[in-house]
Image (tube, rainbow, N blue to C red; front, side, top):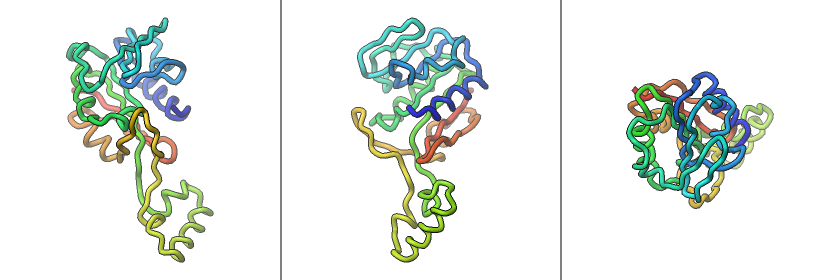
Amino acid sequence: MSPEVHQAFDRIFAMNPITGPILEVGSIRGPESLLTLKSLHQASPKIGINLDPPVEEPDYRIIQGNANDMHLFEDGYFSAVMCNSTLEHDRYFWKTLSEISRVTASGGLIVIGVPGYAEMGVSTFAAGKSWLKRILTKVAQFTKSDILQAGSVTLGIHNYPGDYYRFSEQAVREVFLAGLEVIAIHRVMHPPRFIGVAKKP
């Protein structure tokens, strides 16, 4: 996980303190785990779920399981559920989204981060660099490049174990957070990573 995304999650939870149980879907061991965020020091217990073998750390534990079916957790148990860089690897991500909603308490926080794509054309390749935009605009005009005129920058394939999806900001808002009280959609880095923040009614 990039430091920018890790910091964005830390800021989100600093603004929305959690003291009860928290779940990270797609959790990993070590400092990149969202369960190690400084802003979650009061959350307890801290639980992760992953397809890999279980992990027991002093401050958190990771259970082996598939987030498409989290029957081991009761309805509304968690004060917050977070998930980052996982749903693009989940063939049936809609099942995981349903389970995330089910295990989150009423009034609980749901925070989901995914790699995405945004606007198309030369601007997406220039990433705010006006000199590069001018050059690419000339190249696109000269070559009549469909890639530069209609393309969009996205994160490359990173199989773990597969890599199936990229998402738009609209998908995060209208699909991932459907039926929830949307607080914010954060856009981090280039190519974009979107982090949706919402409360369950």
